[in-house]
Length: 552
Image (cartoon, rainbow, N blue to C red; front, top):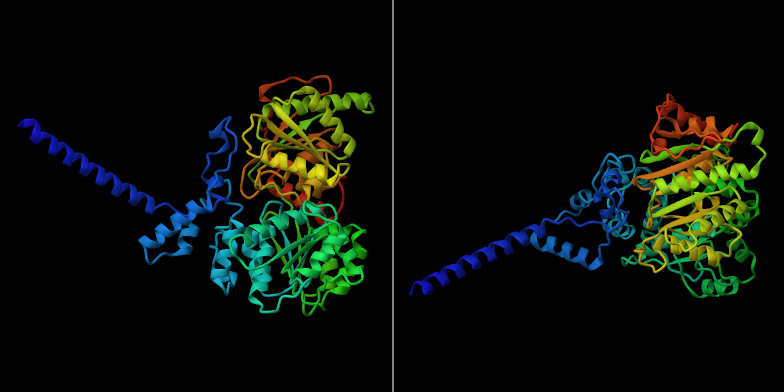
């Protein structure tokens, strides 16, 4: 009798507890914020010091789970405010505060007329809060004025011009014609063109009605010029991405079908290279002759380094051009930790190339050992130097148990470069879960137009000190992008040392090594006090790059 009375009471208690747990669980799920897959893992992950030996592994959020969370919030709250949710999805920390703007995505100063369309484009691009350069550039480009957009590498310049150009294109009613784009984007390299195309593809996958075509001679999506002309003749397009050489060849081809008369925006990405390199001059003039008059076409000039000579040339051709300079222009990202390695040898051994390389080789292996990370870039000045470093690392790890060594330079075929780049980003089995680290040995070809945002670079080694100050900014700018943290190790000797110290300033962690006094100290990478202030360092870099001069 007693057992029969106790059992129902226990069941009732358990049932009540289960109901309470379910209610609490659903209440918790309703408060989960909607996160962008591009930023959620980045800004909610632990710091480098807290992770210790953990690798950087971006979390993946499926579109279906994000959609479920979105629907659940809408059902539970009829007064759902998209702007408030978007603003709360990015956590502003000391590490990324320099990257993000204080303004929200739809701030009134951005002059966005179609907020819903802008919201969809930003969602496709993975943007939940604009970067500083994006917040500055959007209203000016939307106004239709000729604009110069200049900021440091990894600051979000591609979306700074691409999003307003797409907004203008989609809001301008016009009949689509085969081979007649509305937006033309010119890039100096096929790699940069492919990168821009990838961003356009991400945006279009969210249902935005626009088409993109990339036309290059040796890029990832390249075909023969005959096939490219056939596609141009048969397909309408909104955005055409190309290199000056390939598009000028197509324009000179009779009956190519490419019609630039309907263009309303022409973008010159990496304009400093397009204007300084004399080979691009005749090609750009061919494009200019086929484009509409300046009064009908908006020109946007994008660059990470802006010499005064480029500014003067643009202002002469485009009076009244708006100059937008981001806060990080001609500067290294604040979240980048820089280390300087003195690889000098005794004065009497300066011409002993074998000894000089041995010193650098030993310090390279030491830097790789002390900075174990998922992805490392090693920059060399020449193809021969790349091959020498590649052979060195392959000899040290013949079975690729510790690291996978890859190369990326102009002496390789485009197919080989693209394959190595894909392996570097995704891993050998495209899952990124192998136990080895990946090292990409490259020339400055990888410093321009190759975007590693989907596979962040943790460590950059400048094996050969660059001759141009702008190239130094671009090389170390491959790490610590978009508010992330990163490390750079710079090798310098003799006359390069005072220059390197002045450039690196107060953030410098320094190693001093004579040619025959190389000790493997664990404290070698401890930062050393340097009396040069950040203001003097930035002023020095700014003066060198804007004047277009080399190191003295």
